[in-house]
Length: 88
Image (tube, rainbow, N blue to C red; front, side, top):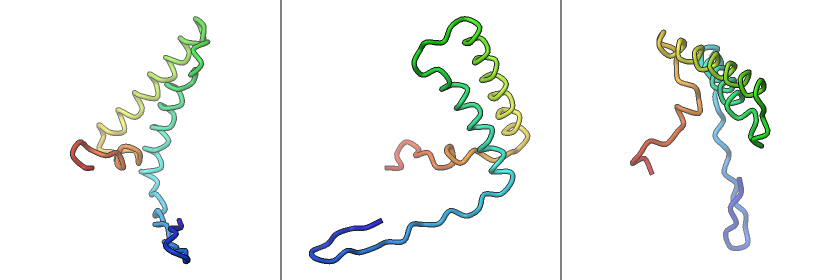
């Protein structure tokens, strides 16, 4: 990341994300599967069986993420990083 100030450029090192642990990776994989299933047909051209299959995949992905969280699993990274009301 660079920031120009007068005639010089200042460089700020990006914060390095720590390697996610396997539990966080699992939560992120479940979140990604759910997101992909829900975003599968963004163009709106899905038809009958295709929509049913997408909903079944999304339901299975949501169930797996729900079970992970209810058993004490960690939140997926996007949810951990999400701004809460009043955080701005």
